[in-house]
Image 1 (spheres, rainbow over the protein chains, first blue to last red):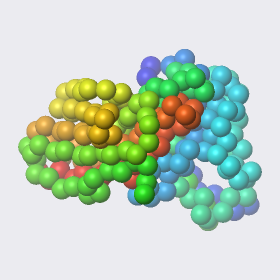
Image 2: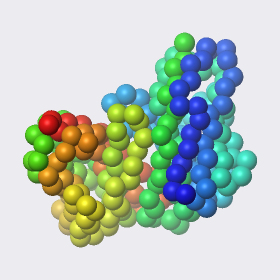
Image 3: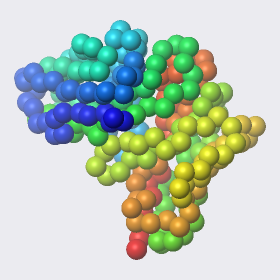
Image 4: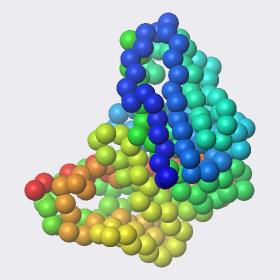
Length: 117
Length: 111
C-alpha cells in the first residue's frame, strides 16, 4: 500500500464551525506533514510530525490544531477559521523525517479542498 | 529573488513534442525533487536526485550540481502529461523534512 488518503475531499464550513481533516497512511512512515496550498502557488508547510511528536510548526495560527494519534494517522482540527484560510490542504508522509534526514521522498495525499464562508 | 526558480512559468506543446522544464537554485542542497500536480490537486513525486540523471518511462531528470541547475525532460509528450510541474530542494542546513519549492510550471499538451 503506497497511498496516502485524506478525508473529506471537499469541506465547506462557516467561521464559527469546528471541523477536522483526516489523513492516513499504511506505509510504515514515521514522518507526516500538513501543507496549505492556495491557487497557482506552491504548497506551504504548516506542521511536521516525526515519530508522533510535533517537530515543526511554521508559526501557524492556533485556529489550526494538529494531532497525531498514532504513526498512521494525522488530523488537523479547524476552529474559527477565516475566509482567507480557504485553500487545498495536503497531507504527506515520508519514511523518517527529522533533523538528520536529508534526502527523503514525500508521498502526498489527494488533498482536502476547504472553503470557509 | 526566489531560492528556487523555474522556467518557463507556462508551456504549451503539441502532442509528441519533446519538452524541457528548467529549475535553477541559489542555495546548497542535499537533494532536488521534481513533483507533478494534476488539476485535481494530488501531488506525485517524480524524481529525487542529488547527482547525474534519472529516467522513468518518458521522463528524464538531470542535475548539474556545479551550475545549480536541473532539467526535467518529457519525450513524446501526451495530453495526459498536462499538469503543473514543481521543482523543490532539500537543504542540508535545515531539516530534511523541509522542502523549498519553486513556483511551478504549468504544462498544457494539446492533441
